[in-house]
Amino acid sequence: MPENKNLISNVSDNQFEYLKLIAEIMEVRKRGEKPLAYIRTYGCQQNVADSEKIKGMLAESGFDFVDAPDDADFILFNTCAVREHAEDRVFGNVGALKALKRRHPQILIALCGCMMEQEHIANKIYKSFPFVGLVFGTHSLHHFPELMYNSLVNGKRVFERGNDDKMLYEGIPVRRDGTFKGWLPIMYGCNNFCTYCIVPYVRGRERSRDKNVIIEEAKQMINSGYKDITLLGQNVNSYGKTLPDDVNFSNLLSEIDSIEGDYWLRFMTSHPRDCSKELIDTIANGKHISRHLHLPFQSGSDRVLKAMNRHYDRKKYLDIIKYAKEKIDGLSLTSDIIVGFPGETYEEFKETLSLIKEVEFTSLFTFIYSPRVGTPAAKMDDPVPYEEKSRWFQELLAVQEEIAAKRCASMVGNIEKVLIEEVGKDGEVNGRTSGNIIVELNAPENLVGTFQNVKITKARNWILKGELI
Ligand code: 5AD
Ligand code: SF4
Image (cartoon, rainbow, N blue to C red; front, side, top):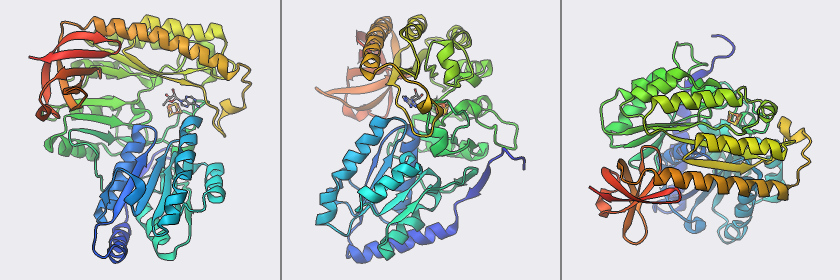
């Protein structure tokens, strides 16, 4: 197999043996009562999907899940390293567990995820948080049962950071959080090395899952009633590049789309660098594919994009958007933006503002640049003070708020297909359109998890109000 291909393997049977052994240990400790686990997930959907695998494994060992750490026998934080703020929250919340561990020395406190793949973080946890018994990174998920077993039986602290970049493991049981809305990972890792981003260092090289395995999982989800399925990957547009077969993301998307059923198919995240016309045509011709494209552009300035190593320029981005708007009726566009990349000037920031005015996004995920240890951008000159960047950030939010309000107002009077998702406040329920816009309406609770046709009656900033028809 060529060098750049990933290797796919089934998780070893041994791991299931460890799950049985964990069940036996917990049975003795709990004298027959169900063991309880508290899992808290920080960060992106990829982490949510990883936590669903950890819950799948724990459920095989007989664990039930609780919403607060107090009664749990096993506490796990699945952490995010993408910005400093996320890391600070983890440190604060782990610190708060010290008293709990003192009161209940039997509990096992564990940390996993992207933060734990960084050596300086793992060292800090080792030194400053001695009550944390188990630490493992994103590459160690496939043998989590063995790691947990080792920390339960020998009482020693277990710390593991993986380096097995090319392997992808199938066969880990999944316990999904939702019953009608679910995540379906199609690939892991990232090869893009945007200069600000820690992801390639903590999640490793790009690895795609086998197409038939993904299609089988999608079928199972649809047959068991999932109505909203999101295909997940750090950069879904490069799906298939590391597989021996001749597949790409558009093929995968249209094959899943051809599965019979009443459901929506979403995907995230796309990189503008390899967002092809073929992909846009696939969305336009899709039966189930939502009319939504999340296409992070990060900056509207060509100089900044180059410094970010993004491999596209403003014109290429706007060309894709133009093509997508022409082809896809009612398209809803969203994006990620970084404000205050090292060396960005106010003039360059204004190019980001002008781009959002031109495209008219439905909503934006906006971030102030956060230096990440080990990335090239962290070594770049960064002369603009944080307070100044915060002012730019506020300016961006104000412009976007107006755009979103205008976009939502233009939908008043439309009839939209809405997936009712949850009970809201004041007897209302909340749902989402195919374009991922929130709709609040009066409707009975038992409609949660169903599609309904809704007349849009009002718009409030980026939220719609509607009524059942
Ligand atoms: N600082 C700020 N934002 C970042 N992102 C990734 N790395 C950083 C960083 N160092 C943002 C990007 C990405 C989103 C998931 O997080 O906009 O698309
Ligand atoms: Fe990070 Fe860029 Fe990869 Fe996205 S594409 S995960 S921003 S390196």
